[in-house]
Image (cartoon, rainbow, N blue to C red; front, side, top):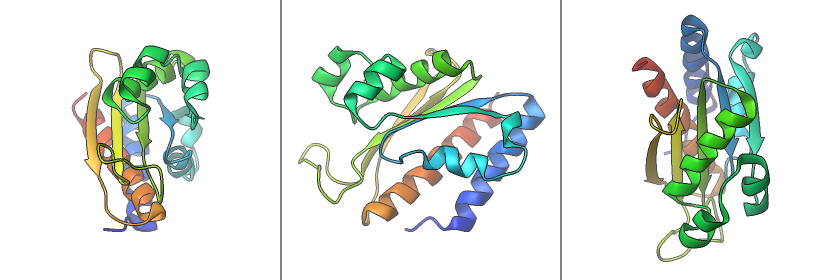
Length: 166
């Protein structure tokens, strides 16, 4: 299923409204989505009231240098894994001082997939501390754009759900 621009906008606006109501801030740590979650969140005027920043950490080196992801996690589990997205959340929280962070790392395609992690495999995490961080894996169908759009929408919806439970 292709996530439409309207769906992305609605999810981003809903999250922005909730963050403003709660006086909370968010940061993003993105790999396969290339900053698209941050883009959706900042499309709305006034988003500086709740978006503190976003880090596009496409390479493993950037994940390590900018977010503090450990070499051990990358070597043992790969960039598209639960331990890595959890560390990305912790790193984004530490780097920005945001109350909440969301992290995404996946295989958008068309290449790069494996039997264990086929194209469309995406790990997500969001939380306000290491103890509160939720991690989820999803597998999306479609081409690169479709996988990325679905990942952005799922991330926004996931953070919306997390914020609703605060």
